Image 1 (tube, one colour):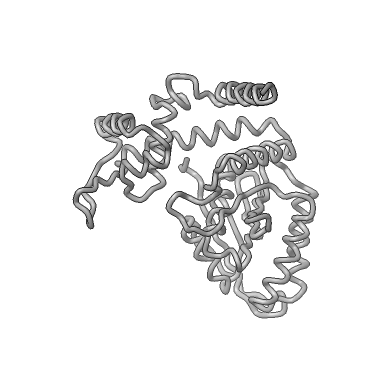
Image 2 (cartoon, rainbow, N blue to C red):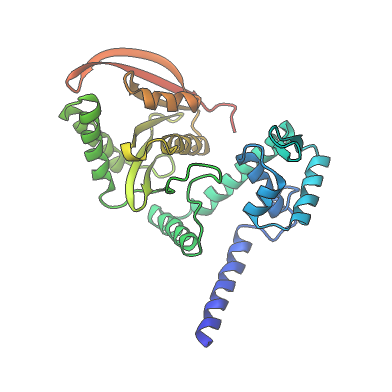
Length: 318
């Protein structure tokens, strides 16, 4: 019994520390006029396609009466609007208004800034320890959401993390193997990837550059890098998703992480270099807002190719 009590007190002590550390005890969360619960409701509205109040209450474990009062407040502030369901007129579907989208975008940006401020004093290994601990807590207590949105595919969830020992070698190996099989690239492509990875390690600036590893069920299924090309231009490099994990949105998520990191790091432009035959990757870049700005025919990796340069401007975007 005493052991249980000690463990309970340890959990309560951590809860007190963490709620104070992330600032959820004040009247307004993130320095806004919204409570933490209201921010969570806005998050669900922003990430669901026309949800009902019932689905939000179930997702958040909220009392329906409390949620109803929150939604009435949002409607009064012109943050949401409702419409009848097409297949069931008895259903009332919710959607953020333009004002609501702007309010959530501001909150989301502040939340990301606070997380960056929370983690930035830590070294890369300490940051990874924190993230791994959070992941372990979530898994142990039944959090099955992973990186998949509530209405997303039922495929097993994946997580994004920093590279560990051996991961960079995996990146070189899998690029060489996959591109040889799918596009007929010779060993010179693998050598180029090895050179890029080595340059990242030798010149790494953690405030300006990063690598993400996508992992599913303990197996690496993807990777991406962002490196400094100049003071104002970030370069996206080595996007890869394993064939077995394609269609889960991992590629787009990795690209989104690069864009958000580049924005937070103060870059004005994100640039990338790809080949015209890599159609799946090109679709991801286009969907993320990149513009195709140049072509250059060349012969590399044992075959004739057309290199493409794509750019995304971050100026004026938050």
